[in-house]
Length: 104
Image 1 (tube, one colour):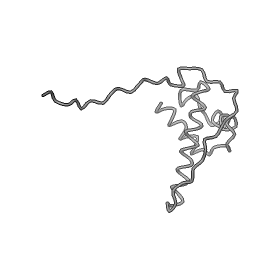
Image 2: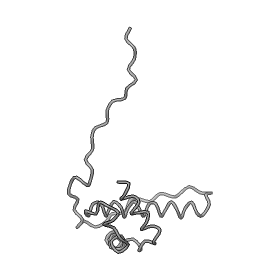
Image 3: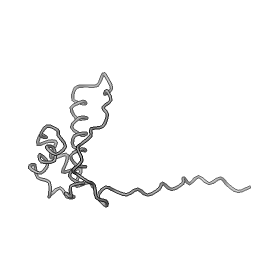
Image 4: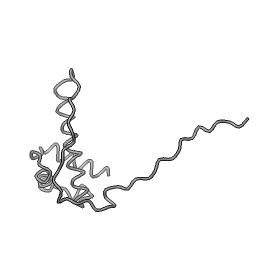
């Protein structure tokens, strides 16, 4: 009797947004918000929301053609925030956006 295979089926390849054109003339549509879990320290909520904002900004910059951290000084990150309709990011959030772009 043959041994059962333990390999998983390969996932279908997906196309990155950096490889295909993304129209930026569409209005930004926010994702439906869900309540955050209760009972965490206030710092957790602040960090969580900062990470979400940094991810949104990094995605906007990637879709706009900014692919390196060097291309994204604070002014560019602030322009991206204005483009998607969020409050201007703090210096800490701008650093986090650049870290995400560098990791990309």
